[in-house]
Length: 566
Image 1: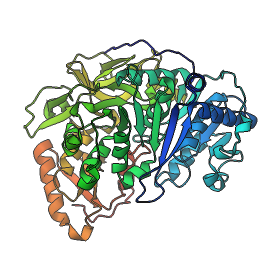
Image 2: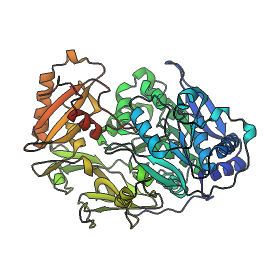
Image 3: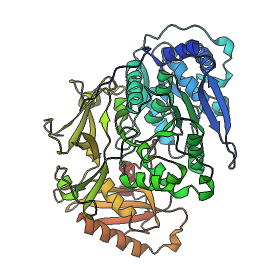
Image 4: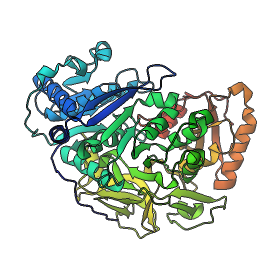
């Protein structure tokens, strides 16, 4: 698969150079707006930086950072979501330092990861805000609060000589977090690729986002792409979205030609949680593209979201299933806006054998998958995971990527870098997929495959079956995984119950029987354990995905009560 488009002009080497360009060309246009929600009933408080103001703030903070660290040193960003995060990130790059996008201490469930990443990156300086200064000073001797640096500190800066722009730490869904070295060229290239794929290179859009800026998709789509194209980026806090998802939709409605991204669960969440009263004044007919970039992208989710908001003018062709990973900066492949969602019903048994064969959509043994379109400015191929031989269309294998967006390797991990990034310029993603009718279809993670009696089972396929068996099961808050037993691999499911239902109200034995019967009937698999656990118990990665690896570790350590075991 190869789809090349010419680069955007003007062409600069780094993001800070683009900031300076737009500050000179369009100084009074809005660059970034952060919408704060200080109270539960808040409709949003807007703070905005123009391109001129952003350029001043970036040059001021960069000059301050240059006093604290030598070129090439790491700078950890421990800022909350907001304009200070944007400024701190761009200033780090402008100073010739290596940014490490993170978050302030205290993020629920992420304390151990923050400690591990800081120990691995060994930052010389930490960037934060006045609000978090006290707690951050305990982590590093040198701390710069973005909002305490005066404009008067701004200085003219020469383009940085450093090759690495930042370390993007993987979310840790399948292994200990590792820092991917993303160069200035990588992030500029990937921003251009994403802009091209979503049509933002030809027509101006407004980027609207609540994804965390420390996550690869949030960083590229809410900072890098708008900076390269000179677009307005409107940000909100992920917590504000989780508390009231209608806030995101209101921002989409308020901005012309809005482009946004969210993981699969967010679309289901909106469809179920946004009330009719909240829909009443929404107009979503101006939305250009809604990117669904999570594994797995479920066609049913797109259908539920469309059904929920068609009355608000939402066009079905705005939903864009996409595929990417941190090792490729983020963006690899996407369905294009304006095109119908491509859905594929595949035979489950054939898929387990590595073949993508069509099935009837109403067949209970069919697997329904969304096509993730085609790449832009890079090459994608499917290979045999063992031999490395290229596979034909319709054969399932490992997805490999080559392009200017593929990172340099892992920070201080030479062996892992050689294994994943190779010597031929091809990134071994560890993801399984196939190509059908020109569409990339992602089927799962190689390391997540569950092998029972010689047959492959995709955990997300099992999870989709489980979550549809009972209304008390919380969607996208469950993990299926394999554990080694005396007679081979045993399959375990750990699932959260909904927040609106207490465990005492649920007939757990009946629920477990229903889950077992559904999985046995559809997949031919006997579940060794089914555990029903309280909301928030199944661990998630920093990007919001369920961490099957950590769930498995906790299960093996006996961390889950056996109330729902059978």
